[in-house]
Image (cartoon, rainbow, N blue to C red; front, side):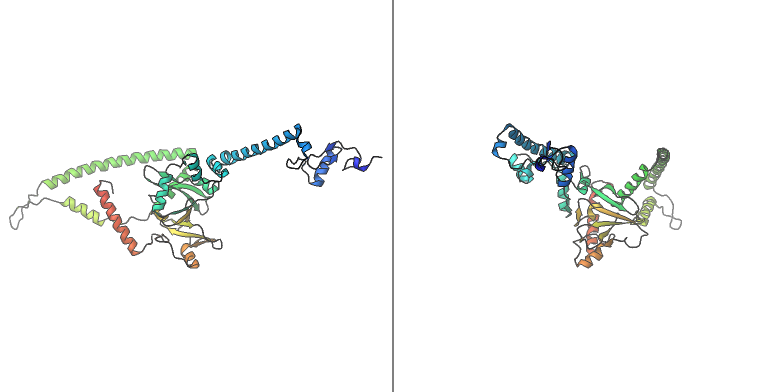
Length: 391
């Protein structure tokens, strides 16, 4: 009978014919080899870093072994770079090279002589953020919020085109851009209209297109009618202004030679009788701006904002994480949903004062701010009238 040391280490019956590359255990069959891997938690892969005597290394087999090991490291590094740069788009090739050299992008640019590539309008956006005192906090590169940030610079209007996250009750989260120089509520209405149009069937779209074309033709006819009527009235007014009234006063016998300014008087009366402020455009919704960087022990903090104001003005002297988040609630909702709190209550709880002239109420400002804003609006309007712009 054969010695047990010369038999298979698993079944102890047959002579071994296989040797495990990792732990050098001998087995007689594939079944015994699999049983050995399960028992010993062995993966069966040779460890290339294990120490071997010089007599084994200084052979053709040892040289091939070392070459394959080094080449495998290079291949895995190239594959990892490809995944990070091309597939996941977490970093650029320049950033990877700078990180490998242990340098910042500025140091890498100085050493290699390559200028940093900036996105179009990135300088203008940074300049306006500094001018409006808006603190932008960038999320880590490759994170979802960083990838979703489509904030850009509108070259034609020379203003920031913000990426906005819209959170609504009973509706999925939506991303829609808003120009920073126009009322925020206009872009919410445009987003709702676009969603409504996309949810329509092809037949409903055709029917709505026909109705829109019919309405457009009626509006055109109405404009032409009003323009014709205005031209007739303008000619009549010119005749009234240039032709003196020749009515004789029955008491004195004197002739009345004063030009008739009834048209101008009527126009003045219409201007003075017109309301100074238009009716609110968004009476059905309440808009709140999410305040980031609050302690996790507090609920989410929301600040009421006025939808008739531009977004850049609402973000002045505030912190934002990549792009602003706006919560829209129906006007019939009393208070805030569970898990949210007002910014005023949060500031009272933490004992801090609001930073500067932040809009924490619906259009609420102090008297000095309102006087300054009114005076600036009057000066702006005077300048626009002088330049011939439409007010």
